[in-house]
Image (cartoon, rainbow, N blue to C red; front, side, top):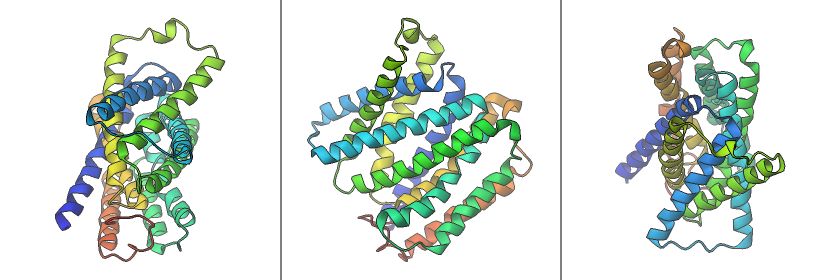
Length: 303
């Protein structure tokens, strides 16, 4: 149904808007990236666990599927750590602009992942989005470390999206989110334990940090995590990743409102934003025509 397609596509944009706000929260929270992600995943996994309990969903999985989800959890944990670290060492704008390369990575990885031929316009669209976001800000070489971390984060995010594109075929979104979050928590916990980071000071945070972390874990993670996986039943991983490139537009706009001149926008912002929006609309039209419905390896309707 066309209305179902539109509903899922608009829902995806709401999720991407929330992800854009995630970057702002990462800047507002004072603690370092690794403990930040640990708190985020711990609280989020607890909230998802409560949701599953009240819904009485089954968490039974095969050992193989469980292992895949736990590994995916490690990947998303590293994705978030590099993402927040990039924000800490640079700023929201530079990090989000560099994250746009996720569509470029996905355009090349998805054909290999699903065993299909590469579609030319996917590569073109990925490059157009990267170019559009490049125009938004003149890249400053003093932020090279932040850009490098964001580049790694984008690659990990692309891989994570492809893994979930397969998991969602036969598993509930809530179960996927729960086990992936648990996998990330366990991975970071082992790292922190080895480094002796679990001290008394580790658990003493400013009240503002607790507030922002809870928003980050509940709205931006528990809700957005499950919703994003569910949406992937109807939208291909490439379309998800391409639409995710609106995250910098939303995030930079929010950062400008909150941080003011510290996130000053370039005069090329509107040109870049126009390129991004045009690219996403063009991609949606081509997907709706069904040119690649049988090639994406995703069950359900594909935008």
